[in-house]
Image 1 (cartoon, rainbow, N blue to C red):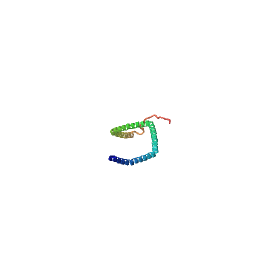
Image 2: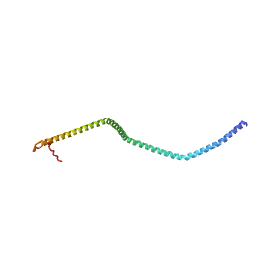
Image 3: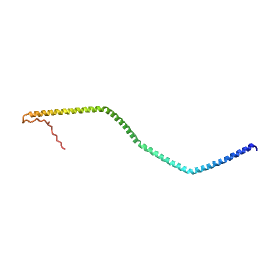
Image 4: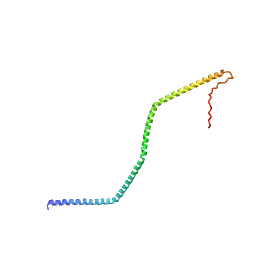
Length: 163
């Protein structure tokens, strides 16, 4: 045997000596992992079964929600239509309020002028009536006694209603 063979055998021995503990540790790790997997297997099966059940329930709920949504679609469409109508009403009210804000003061001024003219005309009529009554009183006081005042009431046919 030569020196190279001896060095090779020594290196092979060191390599085998270092590899054996590593291989032994790897075997122990694999056994431990196997025990963990075997212990977790039923728990994983149970978790997968629960996940499957939950998924089925979610699918049933989704189907029910879709059916109910189809039933509610006309109601939602009506509500959307009402919303659009209310939006149009709001726009119309806004336009009306703008117009009323612009025209309102003029209308109020016109109404105030009308009322003032009416009050003035009523006051003038009252004054004319007082003058007429005063003149009538003067004429009556100038008439000779025994004469009767003329009939000032209008003759109206009487209506008879049976109640």
